Amino acid sequence: MSKKKDKAKSAEDIPVKIVGPDGEPIAAPAEEASKTDAESLVAERDDLLARLQRLSADFQNYQKRVQKEREQERQFANEGLMKSLLAVVDDMERGLAAARENHPADDPLLVGMQMVHDKLMRTLEQFGLSAIDAEGKSFDPERHSAMMQQPTDAAEPMTVLQVLQRGYELKGRTIRPAAVVVAQAPVDEVEESPRNEEEM
Image 1 (cartoon, rainbow, N blue to C red):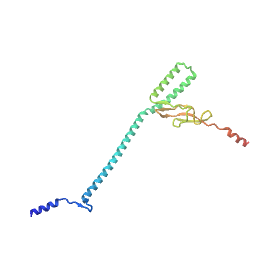
Image 2 (cartoon, one colour):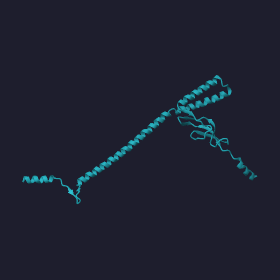
Image 3 (tube, one colour):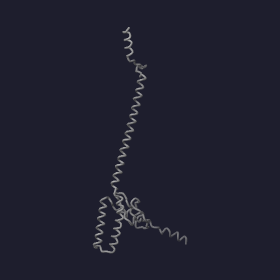
Image 4 (cartoon, helix red, strand yellow):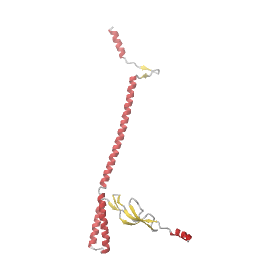
């Protein structure tokens, strides 16, 4: 009796493979469930990996943007001071112009004022300040501020004829546009004369 029972138990332990009509084994329901779980895990892993890559790229872009902003802050940290000193430069230049009209060129006071002005400008240039070259140039609204237009045939329209107040740039950025007079096409009196004759 015990031998028969042992034989029955050993027969139950033998795995049974279900074969289809074509001879290929048919997966048991448990095997199909495990495959589905594995596929969902792979899909979830791929999704998390893609999200992590996007997050990493966004963080790198953020770091670059912050670094660029900090660099610009360092470059233009003196912009407010430069703008305040431009008023001092303007006063010095007006004083020099008045002194040249009333004093000879070799006057010690005039020479001393000119030296101080030149030294101040060299110091400001070391920190990136430069004057805008405007006269004779085409009008640029980012670098020039048109105070008036003057009809003339001596220059092309929208050409800077005169600088009323010098403009300045700080490391390529306009901190004060030049106040200028801009050329305008002259009024054509030849076209208006026939109209006047017809009215008469």
